[in-house]
Structure formats: C-alpha cells, structure tokens
Image 1: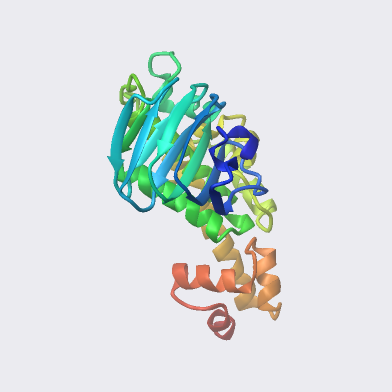
Image 2: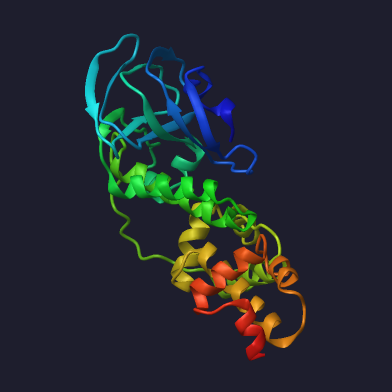
Length: 291
C-alpha cells in the first residue's frame, strides 16, 4: 500500500512528513508519521480504514460527513478512527504530531473476529477514544519503520494482523463474538514445509504471505495455526532460527562476522550483535571465542 490508498490528508501542504512505509513492500497496511498544521477540509472515501494516533495535544478536532457535526478535545494517545469508503469532513484545531495507519479492507475482513456471523465488519467512526493495545500496536509499527531492516517484514505482517484483529474486536459496529472452537495447529506436513522454507530462505526477507502460501492457507489462518503449533508467532520463531544458525557459524568457523550476519538474514553486523545480545546475552565475538 502507498500514499494513493489514503484519504489525501497526508498530501496537504501543511503536513510535514517524518517517515513512512513507502517502498517497504507492505501490502495490507500503510503507515506515515508527521507534523500536521491546523486545517479544515473535506475528503472522499478511501478504500482503506484509517487509524490516527495523536502523539501530543490535547487538540480540538471536529468531524462529520458533509459538514462538521461533532467536536472533541483529543488528548495525547487519543485515537481517530474512520472506516473505508466513507466521506470525511474534518477540522484540526492546532498543531499536532500524528501517526496515520491505513489498513486495507481485505486485511480487516480476513481476521477470525470478522467471520463469526458471515457478515463483513464495518468500523465505527470514533475520535477521542483510547485503546492502550491499539496505541501500542501503532507505536510498534512506527518503530518498525523508524528502524527498518528487511528481516523485519515478518514482524510487520504480524503487527498488521494484530491491528486488524483489535479493530474488529473493539471498534466495529457489531462486535464479533469470541471464537468458541479450540485452536487447531499446523499438521506435521504443513509445519515441515514451513520449516524447510524458513531454512532455505533464512538469509532473505520472508513475509507471512510467503509462509502461508507454502501450506495453502490464508495469512490470518496460518498465523493462528502456527502459533498454536509452536507457542510463538512466526516472526519470533524465524528470528530464533536465524540466531541459532548464526551461533553455529560463529562457533564453528572463521567466516567474518559481517558475512555471518548476511548469511543469516540480518541487515548488518550491528543488527546481528543487537539480536544475539538480546536472545543469548552475549556477542558474536564472544561466541567465536567460545568455538
């Protein structure tokens, strides 16, 4: 997804972009962080659902459709939610730092929460509300963009799924019921196929869509079944495999640490060092000395 999938707020002259997910290959979600000047404008509906997180404030926001009909003081951490294919009139009453997340409707409708009664989910029009989990998901996505590394694509996919699920659970017009059936994990052949794909492409960026396609499942269904099988999400499992291979290479040979990082899917030597310290409590140089 890109700027063309948004409502147009981000193309206004008073918006000063800081960073965005442009060019990162994200298919279901677009993120942008910026400084916005006060404005009043009307926008056509977009094909994506909009989540705005206020990073500071409070600031007065007025919104409506074909006219401004409601006003509210939105505090730091407050959310502005707007569903896809819906016109928007909005007035921002002061300077504001924001994170915008645009989520495709396909991602929202693919969540398990949306399939309980067979009807598509529609988001509420909200502003000034708070949702600590959704706020943390948006901040985590912004963190992925801020410190982007190709190996983070699987983590970004997982965050997008969690964002869609939280929107469906907490911010839909008709909240879906909680699932009642027990979660089914990947079958042995499916898990073997996924492991083989991970092992074969450990040095490359690997998306949830790639992994799900290997076993003929949708992304959301795959993520749920993988976690039921392994006890952790796919991105965390993949990082663990990369760390394990890097540790073996460091202990067993004399390959330069930068080459070990590249061979195991890390962006650079510093990235490898940071992850190994986080997972193993040591450094690549120390592992080499142990070898």
